[in-house]
Image (cartoon, rainbow, N blue to C red; front, side):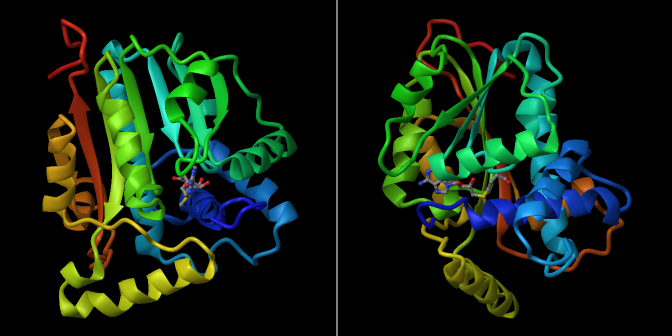
Length: 286
Ligand SMILES: C[S@@+](CC[C@H](N)C(=O)[O-])C[C@H]1O[C@@H](n2cnc3c(N)ncnc32)[C@H](O)[C@@H]1O
């Protein structure tokens, strides 16, 4: 990330989610606040129309990862007391949170988060009492200390969303974050997405993914941590996670958008994993 300014990729993701609300039929991810926050972004950042440069497959990838994440949360909501949105960007789950009594902690780089809070205010989006903002640089700050000072209860079962973030972090920051979740006393469930290294892709897909990586470099947010599915599964298992479900693009499309006509976009995955925690009686387990 470029220090002193909001994450450019967070802006792109927000605009893609907003454009999805109008452009894709059937809509996979319902997010009325995405439209409001994108309008507030467009009012201060002139980047042309939202459909400019956002291919259908990219919109669907984002829509599916958020739909999958929020479906998983709904499926486990009876045993979850807190949600932590790691690297929240302009994600609107916190203001939309439909679950009474559920605390939401939005964690993000301080530069992105301060900017987002200003856009929420511009858009007139109310901030519910259940939502707390937690500024954290995953590379240098202690996630645990910052969450604790915001009222996070490490004895409460927690659902972590970590979408569109892992690839922008160093290996050390990825491991530190996973270790924090794995060492919690209470059970946790984690949804993340990740990208495969270009070297692991079939030849016909390498060029498009390399072009995307170049765009990220130019935005100042290079991809630093990429994994094959075996590598991420091995890493998560090593930290004690289980119940790993990993959807590649083919499975994402088959489950959520079989009639979309989306072309092959190999490389992106969304994944769910659980950690039993260290309490005597694990909660929220299948
Ligand atoms: C592609 S955006 C994804 C945002 C959001 N999760 C979404 O799905 O729209 C990447 C996010 O990672 C955050 N990020 C990148 N590096 C970070 C760091 N070192 N510490 C904290 N957040 C970071 C950015 O601020 C940004 O919000």
